[in-house]
Amino acid sequence: MNAKLRNTKFTNTEKYIKEFIESGRSGDISIVLGDREGEAYRFFSSDRGDVLSGKTVYDMMSVSKIMATTPLFYMAMDEGLVSPDDTLGKYFPEAPEDKKDLKLWMLLSHQSGMGRYVNPEYFGPFRRADAIAFQLSHPLMFEPTTDYFYSCSAFIILGFLLERIYNKPLNLLFDDRIARPLGLKNTMFNHPEDENIVRCTRKAYEGNNKCSDDNCRRLYGVAGNAGVFSCIDDMAIFAQSLLNRHNTIISEETFAKGTKDFGPHLTFGRALGYVYTDERYKQGGRLFSKGSVGHTGFSGTECYADFEKDLYVVSLSNTAYYAAKNGKDCSAECAAFREGLHNAIADDLGI
Image 1: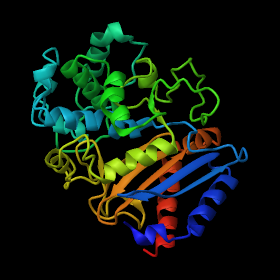
Image 2: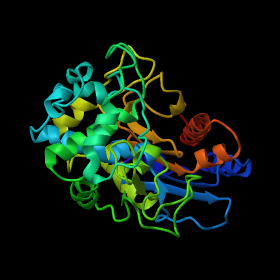
Image 3: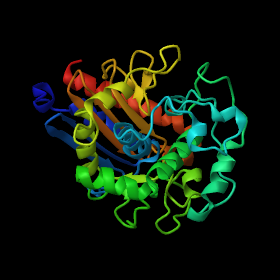
């Protein structure tokens, strides 16, 4: 048990969150902190009054990558169905020549050379081949492993790969193999919630298809790069599982193999599917130990596990929505919020 975490009053953290909202840079922020034994602290703040709860739903955006695609890939590794060293052509024989020999670990660590390409139209479940062909049709941006580019397209392909391996849609795989086993009761793709949901996008909702990401929208809300919606109650459970190395659903050996640094030569640490934190990760502020893993989402979400400090951090916000409304850079605003939040938490913990 992290005794310091459980005996701390997070006055700096709460002050920072309230001031960030009062400055008009975000509207709805929910956070939860915990250790390997479970939740230790949570806090809600909103410019709409006392409206948030543990069940309030947020668009997780790219945190979906470590909630669905990444752990499902690790499970497939455990089952001997896939290896990070497999080539893309093994699973996609229709792949162009310049991509057939890409190793899957390159896609997982964003070193494949693939860019980010927005689907030009809506591709339903019976048009998977068209969606795959579009994402693979573009030339590589650089020689694989020589550089880094954060590629949602690579994760869309990884989502399609998992569907081919298991012969089941990604949303059903997530529900069957992650959400239900972990006890996540309000976490899913294509969330039906219409009331107790935080506005994370300026786009009109299309029924259950609410994801802020254009690529995911045009795959009808289910994609390997985004699409999961969740809440603090469930994220506390998920983050605790991550801090425990997902030991109820993934083997210790596979988790260790995937969560080392695959990009020591890059300006940004990358594990297989995860952000790998060290001194290069500015958003971590003074909080995270080297080797912590997690991910952020464009909407203003994050989930991190610090194995050395026995600490998980989840923050859910709609900072990107407010940044867009204020004419500011969404990614920069979210990054600034996270760095400030992590430093405030570090101050409260005496780090």
